[in-house]
Length: 438
Image (cartoon, rainbow, N blue to C red; front, side, top):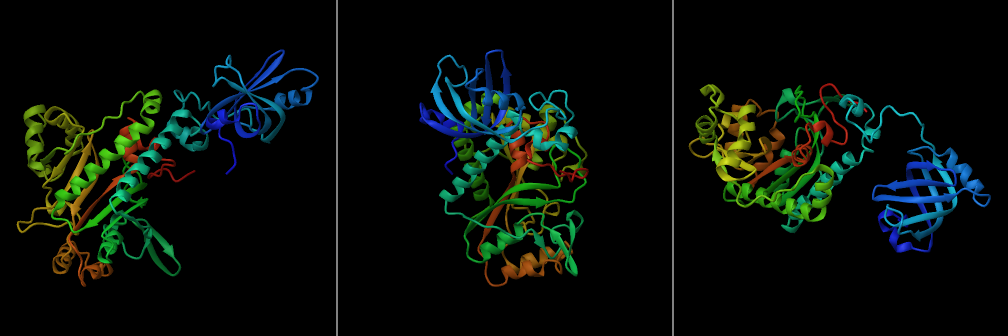
């Protein structure tokens, strides 16, 4: 942990330092050699004069290729004429710790002519691009503040299994794996285990973890494996409290992200982070279709109005902006048959849940959960799942408080925040129907 990071170099003026870094550029001139070194925090210039005294170092620099890694010892000097930070390293020793091949599959500093599939094949090179590295700095920081909001509000982070014994939520959308002498499945979500935690007396829980969906969806927003930010909490008085907590959490995280990285995001992506106002606007599914027809002439058959079509979802961006001057829109009153059996319904069969749309794309499905044993058993039977979810139904047999929750796909959230055209770029390594490597 004593490694010196480039961003902290100013603490070491006129001191001998050891710096490990990657070579960003080499300028080998007649009388001097300039080597630009970089790490994840910045860049610095190393200067080596060409003369007898430095002949051994000159020979080493002659061998250095871009993207090689080096260990340098030397004196850090203030150098006001050096544009890169006003400092330079005068080395006393240079060790090449890894020599990079000169020819690369593509120039990662200019991706404008490189096909996305080629970039994904060589993702380890693609991620060296400054913009791409910044994507994950933003995602990491955003996740930090989403977590921070929950920690500040007495939530406990849990870690649930991803290998499960029953294809419970939807048998057609799970990946089956061999598990010794039987079958197992990759979890679509931690939903059942979040609710088990509530039943166990953990009043407020969350998890950040991978989820798996065996959906043959080749769109810009779907993946077969993604990172989900799941939240569940007890003793609620309705799904509106779930919506309120989610909107407050998002607003908190966006505010803190802008404070920390707003200027950097503006420089790299030319984007200003907009802090949403509270409360987020809400509309029923029925009212949305009515407004879309009246405002934008968008009509669909009645048979399609039991859910948001892709185009209706997209138009919600315009509707939220034009009607509420907002980027977010809660959508409520979905038919119960379109939602999971564990979503609560009222005495009239109305679903007590919602979707959250941001800039025309759904980022969340949330709801009050059914916590009454007899009702959830009945709902499971209606879906033909009662045998598959016997273990789950047991959670509610011995008392379980009213509760609700939601899940946000972090990769999709990042994609929308930074106006990235496809989720393939906002995931560290994309997994889809046609991609399982690297």
